[in-house]
Picture 1 (cartoon, helix red, strand yellow):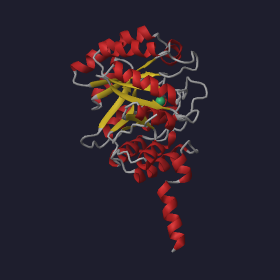
Picture 2 (cartoon, rainbow, N blue to C red):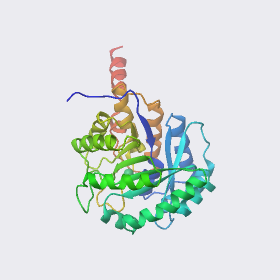
Picture 3 (cartoon, rainbow, N blue to C red):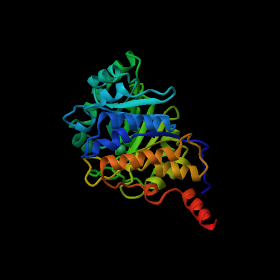
Picture 4 (cartoon, helix red, strand yellow):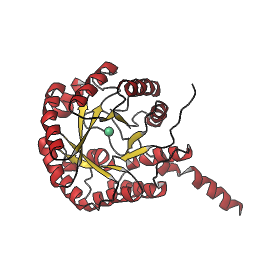
Length: 312
Ligand code: ZN
């Protein structure tokens, strides 16, 4: 196989949302604001700030309104939030968030476990939600969760992804993420699926979102890059998981992904050292070790500078 590398990757930090929503330790509004501002200052172009869902369902995200209002906005940075209904869009707009994301599971069983609704019912609700957002000048993107595999249903057929993508497009949504919520994707599957979906829907701006549950996330990213996808989500320090997916562990760590891209000569415009410092701070705040190779081992270049220092 001849490899095909893009020059540039557009990176989205999802730690403040996907990462923190699964942590027992609740961060303060100030800590969340520092995290988001820190990522923006490091050069991250897209940040998922939080979610506007019911505070009883996800208490970790109950203060998203306050966080969104407090963050100092950098021009050119996209601050987006997850919503599940019209009420969520209203809260987003009231907090100055003009980009919202709707998530739909590719698996009926996961949709029921996660949202307590069928896919058809969820899509019905999305209509009102999207129309309201568009009327009020907010942009809407979509995510297909369990896109590569479901803990209840196993492998997800590509026909299912096509079906859901068509539904999203009927709503006027052309920015979509395929999310491996439970870390079941493998590189060959990602390459085949991403190549197929890109060709089938050339008008869609695709994101890929990998969890490192079984150690395949970076390999999956390489497969995605080769299939021509240039937008990726990750979470600082590798926080995250899914409360409804048994055994699901964190998102791939942002610093691991950015370090790999840097070593490969693929540009992101992000200051890796600042991201590592933030990830370290975040690990302290949540109070436990997380799945981050770079936090454990340091960067390649640290090693070289240590060896050189010894020589002198
Ligand atoms: Zn995720």
